Length: 513
Image (cartoon, rainbow, N blue to C red; front, top):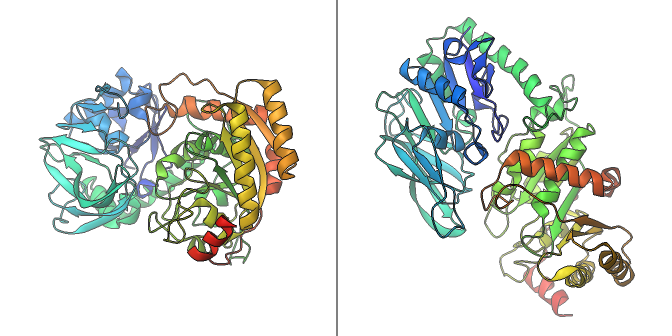
């Protein structure tokens, strides 16, 4: 059987996509496979996306494997962060006044620089490689989910993506999305999901390996066994495990458990985590909830309001779930899929909870004439209960409590069900206790949680800045498990019912009343 490796180190996203269901063996940081040096065993290697560069996960043993496989002419496919591993260097200092550079292996003659992209894309194939043989002039599909997407250098280009938005601004154009080495056996691409969505790319890999029908069958069988191993672990290297196996939730949002011959009309319950503003800790708390619930054996799907799917990456890292074509809920024409379509797609899918992360303030965009343009309108249109979060790090605990109370009042006027509230990044227990009493008294809300400020070892702590997934995710899980009753939170979720979007005039009347 041909052996296709998947790099499995801290910060990598081994289940962010299926990679064409090709990987058969895991390459860990010791550089060994089946007790031998991996380059002696593997016929090809996939390096997934994630925060591999930021996490500093490429050991000398892994470097040796990659370099030796390149010398032997074996295929190496780097995707997003995996692409950065193969490049000369990456400037990860998006919010730094000067470059913050991380070295790659220099196998592909490019460097990476900050450029945020989260579009679903079509890309044109412009040259040959082991991946793109016979496809020149044709198009492939997939999605971008990156912070460092400005690729510069002299490596031969093979893919150009047509994008709509970059760095949060509308700027339709073609950008470089894939290159190869001179020999064509090493490829880097920014297009996630490209193997899953384009069978011709998978066939090219199998042809490059000179596989026959029996070997292809063996590869797919070995891949299923590999998934069982991967999905049993929460995150990577955290020593946290769950009974995940290959049941319905392990197979992703598109599939059912084995033995189900028909789809039920049941829809999983939904719950939204929204906030009074950016930097409140939505991503941190959503990530922690996903990890804590998964450790308890719950099946959790996670979605994002709006286009910035990067916020889902930490939760998917713990959850070992795919990014799917409806992971992003469309608002104001931005994002991937409309809420109504998403709800219909999830009918019969065996999930215990669909957790939705809001965007900015729950009301940001509410008075835009485009409908919907806010997380509030999504919650309202789907009858989705919402937990509101306010960070205490900017205006203090007292201000956070006032913000929560005023937000909750407007949500009640709009008809949005608020299930609970969280004072996040709390730094003084007594003040927070009084603030909680104020929120309960003024809003009638029974459940108000208080979460202390978490200390993260890495610079930043959000996808906006350098992030070590394992540090961020572990701290998020620990915080949620210590400070919050996740079983009670599960009971707050309800099955959604799409009732349509309120008109701009209706919203304006309520807002001004």
